[in-house]
Length: 339
Ligand code: NAD
Ligand code: ISE
Image (tube, rainbow, N blue to C red):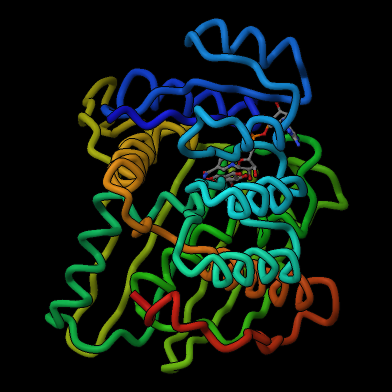
């Protein structure tokens, strides 16, 4: 069976995923596209031989769409995901699941009422080979119980619309998800402190930021988010345990020796850094839809948890930079235990 996918939002990542579903992932076809920019929807649909729909609700309701991909702006995610759940269709939603904890909980409740999982959230780092190796080492126990995690998330630059709260909501949210999964532990408090800001961007943007998280088991996480670091896209993660440490590998790159120097190029964006992770993420999601199984990737609950934790980080940043307790509801049985 070929899974017929309808895409809501044909912007930057929508185009990436449409290309991936068309050229890379077997067993899937993009058969419908909608975008509030009608010309963009028409041009994209024509390119892949899909139909154009006037809006999200019409696309979700169409009988010949098996599954839905939501890649529109964050504030619109909740309505499209809720429509898909109401129609009983599997839905892959790019992060964030929704922009408020209340909307995330509405999705969780709708899915619980449906009785099985339909929603997967686009936290692609769980599919990155390096993070998967990190988790294997932690689960294998060779470095002992984890005590501390040191991370950095650096972007060379960000668009003008990026504001200080987005360091947590848009950027650190990836570490928040992948560390909950990797450690199989819940984040219970968040604090954001700000060093001197870079002079390379607007004075109102607090960049870099240092985020400090604590887990239920007492693991301490420090995360540097620096989104105008200039030199490249750089993701670092080192976990220190009782008996050793494990570090995320840098992406493979040739070493170049020239003009008295030795070095490797640094990637410039998340598209290149996580290209393989995105491919694996969609292969596994399409396979689950094709088999009629529940998705195994990040759930609506994980989307809710990430939003509640980023809310706590933003409250810390915007108040007195003190630790803020994460106020999370009890986890429903539908979502099992922490992975
Ligand atoms: P974008 O602005 O480039 O594209 C969004 C598109 O959605 C636009 O074409 C817009 O016209 C359309 N749109 C908005 N609301 C719509 C609606 N209700 N119905 C139909 N079309 C609608 O944005 P983007 O950079 O592609 O980001 C989209 C989402 O993907 C965001 O939630 C973002 O956080 C997420 N994202 C994830 C990653 C990742 O690493 N996983 C990377 C980038 C973006
Ligand atoms: C962007 O939206 C992403 O999701 C990228 O993965 C992240 O690195 C970047 O900081 C965000 O702006």
